[in-house]
Image 1 (cartoon, helix red, strand yellow):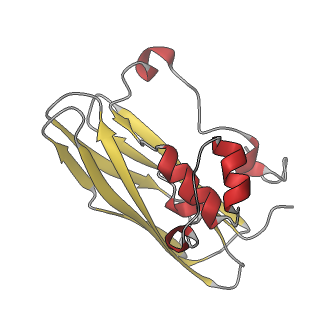
Image 2 (tube, rainbow, N blue to C red; image 1 turned 90 degrees about the horizontal axis):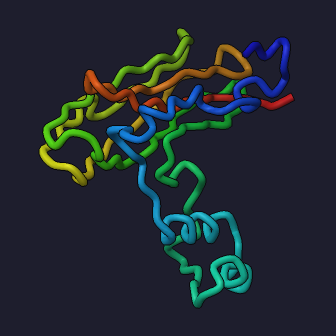
Length: 174
């Protein structure tokens, strides 16, 4: 999608086509639970009263969750808002769960079409030894913006499964 034709650009569509056959056996999942979402809501400034309306239980916000931001959620996407003149440095911590073959090695492949910023994945190889095993990695985005919006992707590939995550760095949304 062209940002010249649609000002919402990368935010106007999903992460790609869904193949229902492959979706049954995705290989990797980014798992989140209720506590992750509670921490996120608290970090966004919601108080305990509002939180209890959402959860319908005795959930509370603590001082430890007040700094939780969207980038801390274990989601399969990476978005950074910045001004066009500043240097970007954002570290995303993610954990994936192997739901594919017990012995699987995934390699990270990053596509990010800009010369002034780069995306690194550490580690860039995840080797699983069992189904249900969780491994963590970091996505590090650093550099400067050379456009109002740059998008790319991270693909974890084991030769059978491809788990794609969109990456967007943007300075403004028109």
